[in-house]
Structures are given as structure tokens and as C-alpha cells.
Picture 1 (cartoon, rainbow, N blue to C red):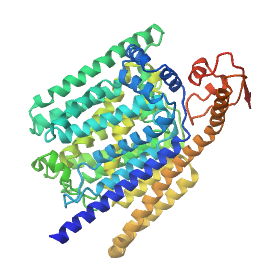
Picture 2: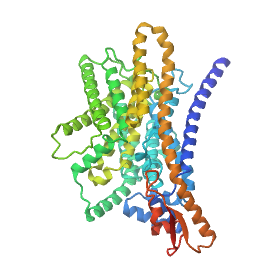
Picture 3: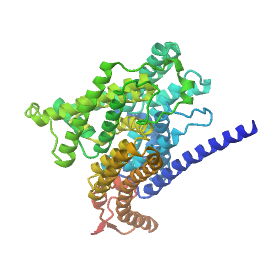
Length: 595
């Protein structure tokens, strides 16, 4: 008994050390890059307003209610930016680390060790995937979502709340204490009153989880969820009020909604754009492998031979009944359908790579080219891509007990469909696709966990990501890896024992290569923000000396070149009134620039 207890604690401690190591390394990377983050654009307004003190806070909240309905987000920004950027530089990495943890928990939810209480070994790999996801995030997405305070408060933080709410709702609503249920009510209100997208995603999670647990799983009566519905909808009324006033203002300003333009921008931003390409490629590849897996004879709910590693879930035993798992093999017609679907999606994926990555043909869906070959090809790929996601999320829910894949997929699609009522300018912004990207990332992490022993899947994933970055050196390395994997597959047919010895080495090598790609992308982003920080730090030091001289004389500042390594950096070059107010500069202060 003592030996068993000792083994239990050793195994659990080993897993915890690995998980915490991944999280701490990620936190260190985020703290590092946030040293070079400054106040940008809207941040200057909120930091300026924070200088008026707490007496101004009620007026600031009222302004937020009338402008967009995001009351508590506006208030939180005023409080967080009162010390200018210093507090955000610590807060944001912590929120990012929390988001990584929740995404990993969702991906590893239906996996765990057969030993049960020893912990979930899949969580470590899921944490690594989620960390690399943020390191790999293209600059055009990252600079307006996670490295800009105003957008982080409006997109990252609400989504972190939504993800935490959804995970706790599913896992704790039936067995949680009264304190946890009160926490769920508080989270429901803040999620509902956060933003239009996050609030609607929160409502979507509440509807799907309540229906699933009450009507399909029959674990809880539906009335258990009624308080959550009430609190969530109460919070969302604030958003609706502000949204209606914003829509009326946009209409008065002459910004009409042109449906075809909105659909074009949504498809371009979410699918047919270089920043979205790495994730579209990984999701499509994962869909193809799942379809191939489910086209094999005798594919059972708990059967993933060789092509996918299976893990069980001790956490699932607390959240769902084991008898719900569908252990019946798929029928012949469904297997044939899956095989045909995999072939069609594979051909469509090759076309996607050719048109977007090789030819780099600009995408535009208009009435004129709607019936052209390019227009029909775009529509076909979008239909196959989205259909595969929805279809497989349903199959994996039934066959693999992976509820979050289904919930996240439906919410991700809904978060984009709801944007058809906004102006095309908003639909073209990468920040509005970020919530859907976060939700769909769980599908990627789950697939990596499942196919982590499949060399072909791993090498194709590395190759496609390297291809999407359009760097010749990385593509060459990816081609070499692809060739080596094919040699390995052929060699393993005749030398099975020796191939098993090389399997782990190839897995490790591919994992290191993928980490190298992510670190390379993050390193370029870090270098760019560092270079952009040099003139900004110089200017802040000059402003500090200006205040020490009791605001006498003029200012000699450096010009800051506009770039993606920041937001609205051109403000430094003309110093608008709100920027002067934020930094306490008198309006009549003469400002000269060093080119």
C-alpha cells in the first residue's frame, strides 16, 4: 500500500511539474514581449479619463452604456489603465496563461489516464499546443487582440470569461457546491454583459449545455439552468441597448450594410487570408484524418488503432455517464460517405493551397464572379470546410464523448454569422474573427492529442504550417521531413521492430521542429516590438524630463514609424489633443521631432 501511494504521488508530481513548467515558460515569454507594449489609440482616452479619479467613473460607465453597452469593460479599462501601461503589462500575460489553461482543459477533457487519480497526461501536451498557438499567432491578428489593451479588454478577456464559464458550467453544475453555483451566476452576468459576440457565445453555451445535460444525457432537470438564463439575458440587455444606439448612429452616418460585401469580408478574414491560413490548414488536415479514421471497418468509439492514440478520461466519469458512449461500429454506407468526404476535402485543400499560398490570388466574391470557376471554387471549399467541421463535431460527440468540440464549433460559426448585420469594415477586422479562432483551436489541440502517434499527420501538420508562413527555408525543411516520414512508413512495413524504435525519435524531432516554427514567429514579433519601443521609450523619457522641469520649454521627440508592431503609432508624430491630455502635456507646448 505504501509503495502504491508513493507511486501515485510521484506520477502526479511529475505531471504537475511538466504542466507548470509549460505554463511558466509561456508566462515568461508573454512578460518579455509586454515590456515593449505601450498605450495605443483608444488606450490613451481611457488612461486620460482615469486621471480624473473615481468621481468620474459613473460618467464613464454611462458613456459606455450609450455608445456600445459594454459597461463593465469600459469601467475595467479606466481602472486598469490609471497607472498607464504598467499594470496591463502584468495583467495581460496572466490572462493569456489562464486562457491557455482553459483551452487545454477543454481539449483534454475527454482524455485521461487509465489510472484515474494519477492525473491527466494529455493535459501537458494540450498545454503545449495552446501555448504554441499564441506564439504562432500571426501579427495581423495578435496586434489588435492580445498586444493592445483596448482590444484585449474587448476580445481576449470576455472570451477568457466565456471559456471559464462554459467549462465550469459543464463540469460543476451537477456536482458543484453552492459557492460554485453562485460563481456560475456571477460569471453568467459578466459574460452576458461583456460584448455582443462574447455574450451571444455565452448564451449559446448555456442553451447547448442545458439541452444536452437535461434532454439528451438526462442528468439534470432543465429548471436547474433557469437562473443562469435569467442572469445571462439580464446582462445581455445592456449590450442590446448599446448596440441599437450604435446601429442607429452608423445608419445616420451613412454606413449601410451591403450583405454581399459583408459575406465577402467574413470569408476572406476567416478562411481566405494569409493570417488565417495556418489554422485553416491544420483544421482541414485534422478533418481529413478523422474522416479517414471513421471510414475504416470496425471503427468503434474507443478504437483508434495506430492512426490515433487513445486516452481515457477520469474527468469525464464525473461529468457524463459511461453508458452514453456509442460503441457500435459505423455502417458501411457511412464509412463510404466518410471516405468520399475525405477525398473531396483533400482535393479542395490542395486547391486552397494553390490559389492562396502559391498563386496568392486576391479573393473577392461579387455578383459578377459568383458563377465563375474561382467563385464556385471558393464556395465549394467553404462549404466542404464548414460541413466537415460540423459533421465531425457531431460524430466526435457521439463516438468520442467530446462535447466541447461540438459546443465550440457551433458557437464559432454563430459568432461569425451574427456579423452579417454589421458594416463590412467590421467584418474585415481580424479582431472579430479572434473569438471564433479561439473556439476552433480546441479542435486542433484535440486532434493533435488523438493523432500524436501518427507520423504522417505530424509531418503534414508541420509542413503545412511552414508552407503557410511562406518562408523558403522552413518549406525546405518541411519537404525534407515529409520525405523522411515517407521513407519511415515504407521502412516500417518490412522492419516493424526497428521502426518502433525510431517512432519516438521522429515524434520528438517533429515536435521540436514545430516548437522551432512557433518560436521563430514569436521571435520576429518580439524583435519588431522591441525596435518599435526604442523611439517610444525615448519619447516617454523626454516627457518625464518635461514634467520634472515643471512643464517649461518645449519637447524634442523622436518620430515613430507606423507599423503593425503597435496600433496608431502615428499619433506620436502629430501628438493629438487626447494624447497630450493623457501624458499631461500643455496644449501650447512646442514639439519638435528628430527624424
